[in-house]
Image (tube, rainbow, N blue to C red; front, side, top):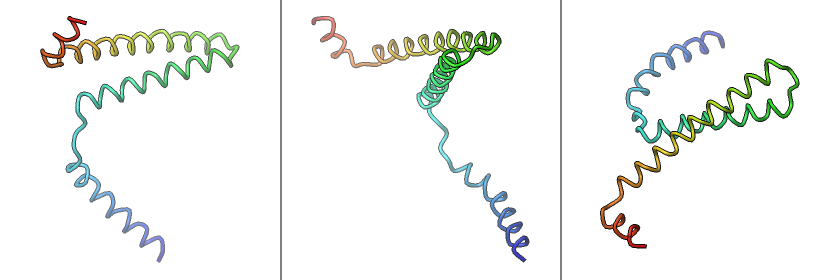
Length: 100
């Protein structure tokens, strides 16, 4: 009897899942960028941890690649974000910055 109830509840959840997902708001570009940046940062930290703990040549090589590549992508993304924020400021704010 418990298995039947569990199966019924599971089937109901599977059928309702797509309907709930349709009502969810799609992430904005800024949210997607933040998620990608955070994931890259986690990869960099994991690579640094692997370098600190591992003596395996293949692991260290992969970790160095992760730190280098994901770190570079994050730096590039951070630079683009900073430029976009400066560009999107009101002209009055830009004039004040130039005068200081």
